[in-house]
Length: 145
Ligand SMILES: [Zn+2]
Image (cartoon, rainbow, N blue to C red; front, side, top):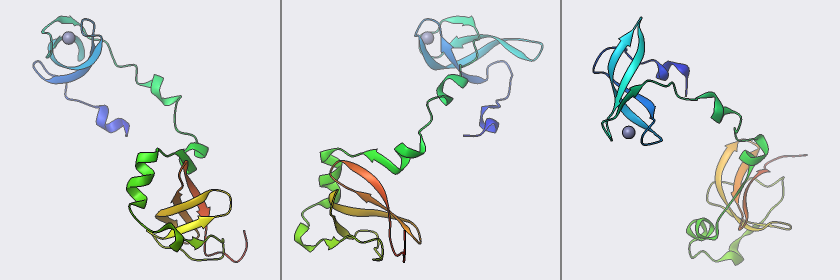
């Protein structure tokens, strides 16, 4: 999501995303008036309402960016967990230890978190593991923590 994608060609009849004051939603609009190279008026593709162009409030969303904590530990639903674990025999889970090397798809048994499935190997020493409650980032293949 770079700023480059926001740049659209400003010309009559071109499409632009804008807030529709009737739909109260962000909709595709057609530019109907341009003043000094700035979009002045647009017509909503959904309801046909022509109104002054309002720029999107793009900055509002940025304050709610996913924190590092949420990225390394995000909630998992029972359905997600069951889909990943499938009908595997959980008695085959390998006991988790940070010194053990795991691969994607490995089933592990963690003393605190329970049985999990390695969903991804992040780098040489980190694995993403889905436990019944959360996705967690764990260390692996290390000599010390
Ligand atoms: Zn509309």
